[in-house]
Amino acid sequence: MSTTTRQMTDYDKRNEFESDYGRIVFSPAIRRMHDKTQVFPLTDSDNIHSRLTHSLEVESVGQSIVTDLFEKGIFNNISLDKTLLFRNLTKILASISLCHDIGNPPFGHFGEEIISSYFEHYFESNKTLCLTADEKKDFTKFNGNAQGFRVLTKLQVLQNTNGLNLTAATLASFLKYPNLSSELSQESYHSKLGVYQSEKEHLEFIRKETGIGNKRHPLAFLMEAADSICYFTMDIEDGFNKKYYSYVELIKYLREKGNISVNNYLDRTEPGIEGLIKRSENKDQTRIVNFRIFLIRHLVEKAVSTFIENYDSILEGIYYKELIFDEDDDETNKYPIVLALKNFTIDKIFAVREIQKLELTGETVIRGLLDQFVESFLWYDSKDSKHKARAKKLFSLVSNSLKTIVFFEKNKKELYEWDNYSKLRLIVDYISGMTDGFALNLYQELLGIKK
Image (cartoon, rainbow, N blue to C red):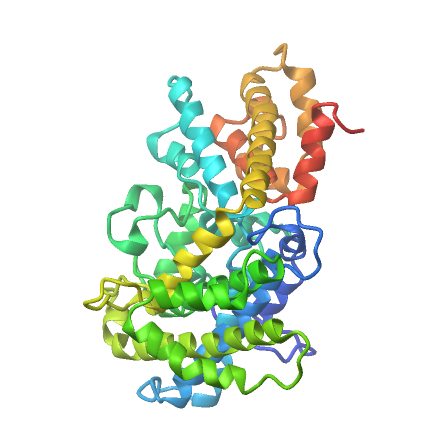
Protein backbone atom coordinates (compact mmCIF):
# COMPACT_ATOMS: atom_id res chain seq x y z
CA MET A 1 0.00 0.00 0.00
CA SER A 2 1.27 3.45 -0.83
CA THR A 3 1.67 6.32 1.58
CA THR A 4 1.59 9.92 0.35
CA THR A 5 5.05 9.61 -1.21
CA ARG A 6 4.44 7.30 -4.17
CA GLN A 7 7.24 7.58 -6.70
CA MET A 8 6.02 9.15 -9.95
CA THR A 9 7.71 8.39 -13.26
CA ASP A 10 9.40 11.07 -15.36
CA TYR A 11 6.57 11.10 -17.88
CA ASP A 12 3.78 11.18 -15.27
CA LYS A 13 3.46 14.65 -13.83
CA ARG A 14 0.47 13.84 -11.65
CA ASN A 15 0.88 13.81 -7.90
CA GLU A 16 0.06 10.73 -5.84
CA PHE A 17 -3.59 11.71 -5.27
CA GLU A 18 -4.18 12.31 -8.95
CA SER A 19 -2.62 8.91 -9.58
CA ASP A 20 -5.13 7.42 -7.12
CA TYR A 21 -7.98 8.85 -9.17
CA GLY A 22 -6.60 7.36 -12.37
CA ARG A 23 -6.21 3.93 -10.80
CA ILE A 24 -9.83 4.03 -9.64
CA VAL A 25 -11.18 5.25 -13.00
CA PHE A 26 -9.47 2.42 -14.87
CA SER A 27 -10.42 -0.35 -12.43
CA PRO A 28 -12.75 -3.14 -13.65
CA ALA A 29 -14.97 -2.68 -10.59
CA ILE A 30 -15.82 0.86 -11.72
CA ARG A 31 -16.76 -0.39 -15.19
CA ARG A 32 -19.15 -2.96 -13.73
CA MET A 33 -21.09 -0.26 -11.93
CA HIS A 34 -22.82 0.66 -15.20
CA ASP A 35 -25.08 -2.39 -14.72
CA LYS A 36 -25.65 -2.14 -10.98
CA THR A 37 -28.88 -0.90 -9.48
CA GLN A 38 -29.25 2.59 -8.09
CA VAL A 39 -33.00 2.35 -7.39
CA PHE A 40 -34.56 0.53 -10.35
CA PRO A 41 -33.22 -3.03 -10.77
CA LEU A 42 -32.78 -4.54 -14.23
CA THR A 43 -34.09 -1.42 -15.94
CA ASP A 44 -33.85 -1.24 -19.72
CA SER A 45 -34.18 2.54 -19.75
CA ASP A 46 -31.11 4.59 -20.71
CA ASN A 47 -32.59 7.55 -18.86
CA ILE A 48 -32.50 5.97 -15.39
CA HIS A 49 -29.51 6.14 -13.06
CA SER A 50 -27.10 3.27 -12.55
CA ARG A 51 -24.51 3.11 -9.78
CA LEU A 52 -21.97 4.53 -12.21
CA THR A 53 -23.96 7.59 -13.29
CA HIS A 54 -24.92 8.21 -9.68
CA SER A 55 -21.26 8.06 -8.63
CA LEU A 56 -20.22 10.51 -11.36
CA GLU A 57 -22.81 12.96 -10.07
CA VAL A 58 -21.63 12.49 -6.48
CA GLU A 59 -18.12 13.29 -7.68
CA SER A 60 -19.34 16.53 -9.23
CA VAL A 61 -21.31 17.62 -6.15
CA GLY A 62 -18.43 16.66 -3.85
CA GLN A 63 -16.04 18.91 -5.73
CA SER A 64 -18.57 21.74 -5.56
CA ILE A 65 -18.64 21.38 -1.78
CA VAL A 66 -14.83 21.56 -1.52
CA THR A 67 -14.74 24.61 -3.81
CA ASP A 68 -17.29 26.41 -1.64
CA LEU A 69 -15.35 25.57 1.52
CA PHE A 70 -12.17 27.03 0.05
CA GLU A 71 -13.98 30.18 -1.04
CA LYS A 72 -15.25 30.63 2.52
CA GLY A 73 -11.70 30.32 3.89
CA ILE A 74 -12.24 27.31 6.13
CA PHE A 75 -8.74 25.98 5.36
CA ASN A 76 -6.89 29.31 5.69
CA ASN A 77 -5.25 28.31 8.98
CA ILE A 78 -3.60 25.23 7.45
CA SER A 79 0.07 25.99 6.82
CA LEU A 80 0.26 24.52 3.33
CA ASP A 81 0.32 26.04 -0.13
CA LYS A 82 -3.35 26.75 -0.80
CA THR A 83 -3.17 25.96 -4.51
CA LEU A 84 -1.65 22.56 -3.82
CA LEU A 85 -4.06 21.93 -0.95
CA PHE A 86 -7.04 22.69 -3.17
CA ARG A 87 -5.62 20.48 -5.92
CA ASN A 88 -5.13 17.58 -3.50
CA LEU A 89 -8.38 17.81 -1.55
CA THR A 90 -10.55 18.10 -4.65
CA LYS A 91 -8.84 15.09 -6.19
CA ILE A 92 -9.14 12.96 -3.03
CA LEU A 93 -12.83 13.83 -2.77
CA ALA A 94 -13.30 13.08 -6.48
CA SER A 95 -11.70 9.67 -5.96
CA ILE A 96 -13.74 8.62 -2.94
CA SER A 97 -16.96 9.99 -4.45
CA LEU A 98 -16.42 8.03 -7.66
CA CYS A 99 -15.74 4.77 -5.82
CA HIS A 100 -18.00 5.18 -2.77
CA ASP A 101 -20.38 2.46 -4.08
CA ILE A 102 -17.68 0.25 -5.62
CA GLY A 103 -18.41 -2.57 -3.14
CA ASN A 104 -22.19 -2.58 -3.46
CA PRO A 105 -23.69 -5.93 -4.52
CA PRO A 106 -26.19 -6.38 -7.37
CA PHE A 107 -29.73 -5.11 -6.78
CA GLY A 108 -28.72 -2.08 -4.74
CA HIS A 109 -28.90 -1.64 -0.98
CA PHE A 110 -31.52 -4.37 -0.87
CA GLY A 111 -28.74 -6.72 -1.99
CA GLU A 112 -26.83 -5.87 1.20
CA GLU A 113 -29.83 -6.84 3.30
CA ILE A 114 -30.24 -10.11 1.43
CA ILE A 115 -26.63 -11.18 2.01
CA SER A 116 -26.72 -10.22 5.70
CA SER A 117 -30.02 -11.99 6.28
CA TYR A 118 -28.86 -15.11 4.44
CA PHE A 119 -25.84 -15.57 6.68
CA GLU A 120 -27.77 -14.78 9.86
CA HIS A 121 -30.03 -17.73 9.12
CA TYR A 122 -27.20 -19.91 7.85
CA PHE A 123 -25.03 -19.49 10.94
CA GLU A 124 -28.04 -19.99 13.19
CA SER A 125 -28.68 -23.33 11.48
CA ASN A 126 -25.00 -24.32 11.42
CA LYS A 127 -23.74 -23.39 14.87
CA THR A 128 -20.72 -25.72 14.75
CA LEU A 129 -19.25 -23.97 11.73
CA CYS A 130 -15.64 -23.04 12.45
CA LEU A 131 -15.63 -19.22 12.45
CA THR A 132 -15.02 -16.70 15.23
CA ALA A 133 -17.79 -14.37 16.35
CA ASP A 134 -16.10 -11.41 14.65
CA GLU A 135 -15.62 -13.36 11.43
CA LYS A 136 -19.33 -14.23 11.40
CA LYS A 137 -20.21 -10.55 11.78
CA ASP A 138 -18.30 -9.82 8.56
CA PHE A 139 -21.09 -11.72 6.81
CA THR A 140 -24.14 -11.13 9.02
CA LYS A 141 -23.42 -7.39 8.94
CA PHE A 142 -22.34 -7.32 5.31
CA ASN A 143 -21.88 -3.75 4.17
CA GLY A 144 -21.10 -2.37 0.73
CA ASN A 145 -18.68 0.11 2.28
CA ALA A 146 -16.61 -2.64 3.89
CA GLN A 147 -16.73 -4.61 0.65
CA GLY A 148 -15.63 -1.48 -1.19
CA PHE A 149 -12.62 -1.11 1.10
CA ARG A 150 -11.75 -4.73 0.33
CA VAL A 151 -12.09 -4.08 -3.40
CA LEU A 152 -9.73 -1.09 -3.22
CA THR A 153 -7.14 -2.68 -0.94
CA LYS A 154 -7.10 -6.25 -2.27
CA LEU A 155 -9.45 -7.39 -4.99
CA GLN A 156 -8.15 -5.25 -7.84
CA VAL A 157 -5.02 -7.36 -8.06
CA LEU A 158 -1.74 -6.08 -9.47
CA GLN A 159 1.16 -8.18 -8.23
CA ASN A 160 0.55 -8.00 -4.50
CA THR A 161 -2.22 -7.93 -1.92
CA ASN A 162 -2.53 -4.14 -1.87
CA GLY A 163 -5.20 -3.89 -4.56
CA LEU A 164 -5.04 -0.55 -6.36
CA ASN A 165 -2.16 0.52 -4.10
CA LEU A 166 -3.87 3.77 -3.13
CA THR A 167 -2.50 6.35 -0.72
CA ALA A 168 -3.34 6.08 2.95
CA ALA A 169 -5.01 9.51 2.77
CA THR A 170 -7.43 8.43 0.03
CA LEU A 171 -8.27 5.18 1.81
CA ALA A 172 -8.78 6.94 5.15
CA SER A 173 -11.16 9.39 3.46
CA PHE A 174 -13.05 6.53 1.85
CA LEU A 175 -13.87 4.97 5.23
CA LYS A 176 -17.41 6.10 5.92
CA TYR A 177 -17.49 3.61 8.80
CA PRO A 178 -13.89 3.26 10.12
CA ASN A 179 -14.71 0.19 12.23
CA LEU A 180 -13.96 -3.49 12.47
CA SER A 181 -16.73 -5.83 13.64
CA SER A 182 -15.02 -5.90 17.06
CA GLU A 183 -15.24 -2.09 17.37
CA LEU A 184 -18.92 -1.42 16.82
CA SER A 185 -20.85 0.84 19.19
CA GLN A 186 -24.06 2.89 19.17
CA GLU A 187 -22.42 6.16 18.12
CA SER A 188 -23.57 7.04 14.59
CA TYR A 189 -20.74 6.15 12.21
CA HIS A 190 -19.34 3.65 14.72
CA SER A 191 -22.55 1.60 14.55
CA LYS A 192 -21.86 0.02 11.16
CA LEU A 193 -19.19 -2.34 9.89
CA GLY A 194 -16.71 -0.62 7.59
CA VAL A 195 -13.71 -2.97 7.49
CA TYR A 196 -13.65 -6.77 7.50
CA GLN A 197 -11.29 -8.83 9.64
CA SER A 198 -9.51 -9.76 6.41
CA GLU A 199 -8.45 -6.12 5.96
CA LYS A 200 -7.55 -5.46 9.59
CA GLU A 201 -3.86 -4.95 8.78
CA HIS A 202 -4.71 -2.38 6.11
CA LEU A 203 -6.84 -0.44 8.59
CA GLU A 204 -4.06 -0.51 11.18
CA PHE A 205 -1.60 0.75 8.57
CA ILE A 206 -3.90 3.64 7.61
CA ARG A 207 -4.45 4.61 11.23
CA LYS A 208 -0.71 4.65 11.82
CA GLU A 209 0.12 6.61 8.66
CA THR A 210 -2.58 9.25 9.04
CA GLY A 211 -2.83 9.41 12.84
CA ILE A 212 -6.61 9.39 12.52
CA GLY A 213 -7.23 6.51 14.93
CA ASN A 214 -10.85 5.34 14.85
CA LYS A 215 -12.18 8.79 13.91
CA ARG A 216 -13.90 9.42 10.62
CA HIS A 217 -11.81 11.48 8.21
CA PRO A 218 -13.30 14.99 7.63
CA LEU A 219 -13.51 14.39 3.88
CA ALA A 220 -15.72 11.36 4.50
CA PHE A 221 -18.39 13.72 5.86
CA LEU A 222 -18.27 15.69 2.61
CA MET A 223 -18.51 12.55 0.48
CA GLU A 224 -21.47 11.35 2.58
CA ALA A 225 -23.23 14.68 2.07
CA ALA A 226 -22.63 14.65 -1.69
CA ASP A 227 -23.95 11.07 -1.86
CA SER A 228 -27.14 11.91 0.03
CA ILE A 229 -27.74 15.06 -2.01
CA CYS A 230 -27.56 13.10 -5.26
CA TYR A 231 -29.43 10.15 -3.82
CA PHE A 232 -32.54 12.12 -2.94
CA THR A 233 -32.61 14.63 -5.77
CA MET A 234 -31.82 12.22 -8.60
CA ASP A 235 -34.04 9.41 -7.29
CA ILE A 236 -36.90 11.89 -7.39
CA GLU A 237 -36.09 12.83 -10.99
CA ASP A 238 -35.90 9.14 -11.93
CA GLY A 239 -39.29 8.48 -10.33
CA PHE A 240 -40.72 11.40 -12.27
CA ASN A 241 -39.25 10.00 -15.51
CA LYS A 242 -40.87 6.65 -14.69
CA LYS A 243 -44.19 8.56 -14.41
CA TYR A 244 -44.78 7.57 -10.80
CA TYR A 245 -45.93 11.12 -9.98
CA SER A 246 -46.16 14.62 -11.41
CA TYR A 247 -44.25 17.74 -10.43
CA VAL A 248 -47.41 19.13 -8.84
CA GLU A 249 -47.80 15.99 -6.70
CA LEU A 250 -44.19 16.29 -5.55
CA ILE A 251 -44.55 19.91 -4.47
CA LYS A 252 -47.88 19.22 -2.76
CA TYR A 253 -46.34 16.36 -0.77
CA LEU A 254 -43.36 18.47 0.33
CA ARG A 255 -45.61 21.33 1.41
CA GLU A 256 -47.89 19.04 3.42
CA LYS A 257 -45.11 17.02 5.07
CA GLY A 258 -42.50 19.75 5.30
CA ASN A 259 -42.07 22.27 8.08
CA ILE A 260 -42.19 26.07 7.87
CA SER A 261 -38.67 26.28 6.44
CA VAL A 262 -39.62 23.87 3.63
CA ASN A 263 -42.63 25.94 2.67
CA ASN A 264 -40.60 29.14 2.82
CA TYR A 265 -37.99 27.53 0.58
CA LEU A 266 -40.64 26.47 -1.93
CA ASP A 267 -42.17 29.96 -1.82
CA ARG A 268 -38.77 31.36 -2.82
CA THR A 269 -37.87 28.84 -5.49
CA GLU A 270 -41.13 28.09 -7.29
CA PRO A 271 -41.41 31.57 -8.91
CA GLY A 272 -37.83 31.21 -10.14
CA ILE A 273 -38.59 27.79 -11.61
CA GLU A 274 -41.73 29.07 -13.33
CA GLY A 275 -39.71 31.99 -14.72
CA LEU A 276 -37.51 29.52 -16.58
CA ILE A 277 -40.45 28.10 -18.56
CA LYS A 278 -39.97 29.44 -22.10
CA ARG A 279 -42.15 27.09 -24.16
CA SER A 280 -45.42 25.28 -23.71
CA GLU A 281 -43.85 21.87 -24.43
CA ASN A 282 -42.37 19.66 -21.68
CA LYS A 283 -43.24 22.11 -18.91
CA ASP A 284 -43.19 19.52 -16.14
CA GLN A 285 -39.88 18.10 -17.35
CA THR A 286 -38.38 21.58 -17.26
CA ARG A 287 -39.81 22.18 -13.80
CA ILE A 288 -38.43 18.93 -12.34
CA VAL A 289 -34.96 19.49 -13.81
CA ASN A 290 -34.74 23.04 -12.50
CA PHE A 291 -36.18 22.00 -9.14
CA ARG A 292 -33.32 19.48 -8.93
CA ILE A 293 -30.76 22.18 -9.83
CA PHE A 294 -32.14 24.60 -7.21
CA LEU A 295 -32.34 21.84 -4.61
CA ILE A 296 -28.76 20.62 -5.11
CA ARG A 297 -27.49 24.17 -4.73
CA HIS A 298 -29.52 24.61 -1.54
CA LEU A 299 -28.29 21.34 -0.02
CA VAL A 300 -24.66 22.04 -0.97
CA GLU A 301 -24.95 25.34 0.89
CA LYS A 302 -26.44 23.45 3.85
CA ALA A 303 -23.58 20.92 3.88
CA VAL A 304 -20.95 23.67 3.65
CA SER A 305 -22.44 25.80 6.44
CA THR A 306 -22.89 22.78 8.74
CA PHE A 307 -19.31 21.64 8.11
CA ILE A 308 -17.98 25.11 8.95
CA GLU A 309 -20.12 25.39 12.10
CA ASN A 310 -18.88 22.03 13.36
CA TYR A 311 -15.35 22.11 11.95
CA ASP A 312 -13.54 21.80 15.28
CA SER A 313 -15.78 18.96 16.47
CA ILE A 314 -15.28 17.14 13.17
CA LEU A 315 -11.49 17.39 13.49
CA GLU A 316 -11.67 16.17 17.11
CA GLY A 317 -13.78 13.18 16.07
CA ILE A 318 -16.74 14.08 18.28
CA TYR A 319 -19.23 15.09 15.58
CA TYR A 320 -21.58 12.22 14.78
CA LYS A 321 -24.35 13.66 12.63
CA GLU A 322 -24.76 13.78 8.86
CA LEU A 323 -24.17 17.28 7.50
CA ILE A 324 -27.39 17.75 5.55
CA PHE A 325 -29.50 16.08 8.25
CA ASP A 326 -28.17 18.25 11.06
CA GLU A 327 -31.37 20.21 11.55
CA ASP A 328 -34.06 20.08 14.22
CA ASP A 329 -37.77 19.86 13.46
CA ASP A 330 -39.68 22.98 14.43
CA GLU A 331 -42.83 23.34 16.49
CA THR A 332 -45.08 22.14 13.65
CA ASN A 333 -43.79 18.57 14.12
CA LYS A 334 -43.19 18.39 10.39
CA TYR A 335 -40.02 17.56 8.50
CA PRO A 336 -37.05 19.62 7.28
CA ILE A 337 -36.46 19.47 3.53
CA VAL A 338 -34.15 16.43 3.53
CA LEU A 339 -36.43 14.28 5.69
CA ALA A 340 -39.42 15.34 3.59
CA LEU A 341 -37.54 14.21 0.47
CA LYS A 342 -36.54 10.94 2.15
CA ASN A 343 -40.13 10.17 3.10
CA PHE A 344 -41.27 11.05 -0.40
CA THR A 345 -38.93 8.46 -1.94
CA ILE A 346 -40.16 5.85 0.55
CA ASP A 347 -43.84 6.56 -0.10
CA LYS A 348 -43.79 7.28 -3.82
CA ILE A 349 -40.89 5.24 -5.23
CA PHE A 350 -39.92 2.27 -3.08
CA ALA A 351 -43.53 1.35 -2.39
CA VAL A 352 -44.35 1.02 -6.10
CA ARG A 353 -45.24 -2.54 -7.16
CA GLU A 354 -42.65 -2.52 -9.95
CA ILE A 355 -39.85 -1.88 -7.46
CA GLN A 356 -41.22 -4.43 -5.00
CA LYS A 357 -41.40 -7.09 -7.71
CA LEU A 358 -37.86 -6.44 -8.95
CA GLU A 359 -36.48 -6.49 -5.41
CA LEU A 360 -38.09 -9.90 -4.92
CA THR A 361 -36.37 -11.00 -8.13
CA GLY A 362 -33.08 -9.78 -6.69
CA GLU A 363 -33.67 -11.65 -3.46
CA THR A 364 -34.38 -14.88 -5.33
CA VAL A 365 -31.23 -14.49 -7.44
CA ILE A 366 -28.79 -13.64 -4.64
CA ARG A 367 -30.15 -16.27 -2.24
CA GLY A 368 -30.12 -18.81 -5.04
CA LEU A 369 -26.50 -18.11 -5.92
CA LEU A 370 -25.45 -18.26 -2.27
CA ASP A 371 -27.22 -21.62 -1.94
CA GLN A 372 -25.30 -22.95 -4.93
CA PHE A 373 -21.85 -21.91 -3.72
CA VAL A 374 -21.93 -21.95 0.10
CA GLU A 375 -22.87 -25.58 0.65
CA SER A 376 -20.61 -26.92 -2.09
CA PHE A 377 -17.56 -24.96 -0.96
CA LEU A 378 -17.93 -25.67 2.75
CA TRP A 379 -18.60 -29.39 2.28
CA TYR A 380 -15.53 -29.76 0.09
CA ASP A 381 -13.23 -30.15 3.08
CA SER A 382 -10.94 -33.00 2.04
CA LYS A 383 -9.14 -34.20 -1.07
CA ASP A 384 -11.50 -37.13 -1.56
CA SER A 385 -14.75 -35.41 -0.54
CA LYS A 386 -17.83 -36.60 -2.40
CA HIS A 387 -18.60 -32.92 -3.05
CA LYS A 388 -15.34 -32.45 -4.93
CA ALA A 389 -16.68 -32.56 -8.50
CA ARG A 390 -19.43 -29.98 -8.05
CA ALA A 391 -17.29 -27.71 -5.86
CA LYS A 392 -14.48 -27.67 -8.42
CA LYS A 393 -16.90 -26.84 -11.24
CA LEU A 394 -18.32 -23.91 -9.27
CA PHE A 395 -14.81 -22.87 -8.23
CA SER A 396 -13.81 -22.69 -11.90
CA LEU A 397 -16.52 -20.06 -12.49
CA VAL A 398 -14.90 -17.62 -10.06
CA SER A 399 -12.47 -15.18 -11.65
CA ASN A 400 -8.80 -15.95 -11.16
CA SER A 401 -8.12 -12.47 -9.81
CA LEU A 402 -10.37 -13.15 -6.80
CA LYS A 403 -8.84 -16.57 -6.15
CA THR A 404 -5.34 -15.10 -6.39
CA ILE A 405 -5.93 -13.11 -3.20
CA VAL A 406 -6.34 -16.30 -1.17
CA PHE A 407 -3.39 -17.90 -2.98
CA PHE A 408 -1.25 -14.95 -1.86
CA GLU A 409 -2.52 -14.95 1.72
CA LYS A 410 -2.82 -18.67 2.47
CA ASN A 411 -0.23 -20.07 0.09
CA LYS A 412 -2.75 -22.81 -0.72
CA LYS A 413 -4.30 -23.32 -4.14
CA GLU A 414 -6.69 -26.17 -3.42
CA LEU A 415 -10.13 -25.11 -2.24
CA TYR A 416 -10.45 -27.98 0.26
CA GLU A 417 -7.31 -26.69 2.05
CA TRP A 418 -8.84 -23.31 2.77
CA ASP A 419 -10.47 -22.34 6.07
CA ASN A 420 -14.20 -21.63 6.09
CA TYR A 421 -13.75 -17.87 6.43
CA SER A 422 -11.66 -17.73 3.23
CA LYS A 423 -14.19 -19.86 1.34
CA LEU A 424 -17.10 -17.63 2.36
CA ARG A 425 -15.06 -14.51 1.70
CA LEU A 426 -14.42 -15.68 -1.88
CA ILE A 427 -18.11 -16.44 -2.45
CA VAL A 428 -19.20 -13.01 -1.23
CA ASP A 429 -16.43 -11.33 -3.23
CA TYR A 430 -17.65 -13.08 -6.37
CA ILE A 431 -21.38 -12.51 -5.94
CA SER A 432 -21.15 -8.94 -4.64
CA GLY A 433 -18.97 -8.01 -7.60
CA MET A 434 -21.53 -9.17 -10.15
CA THR A 435 -23.68 -6.81 -12.17
CA ASP A 436 -27.45 -7.23 -11.95
CA GLY A 437 -27.66 -8.80 -15.39
CA PHE A 438 -24.75 -11.19 -14.87
CA ALA A 439 -26.15 -12.38 -11.55
CA LEU A 440 -29.57 -13.05 -13.09
CA ASN A 441 -28.09 -14.90 -16.08
CA LEU A 442 -25.78 -17.06 -13.95
CA TYR A 443 -28.61 -17.96 -11.58
CA GLN A 444 -30.82 -19.00 -14.50
CA GLU A 445 -28.00 -21.03 -16.08
CA LEU A 446 -27.17 -22.89 -12.85
CA LEU A 447 -30.83 -23.79 -12.39
CA GLY A 448 -31.14 -24.94 -15.99
CA ILE A 449 -33.66 -22.23 -16.80
CA LYS A 450 -31.42 -20.72 -19.45
CA LYS A 451 -28.60 -22.09 -21.57
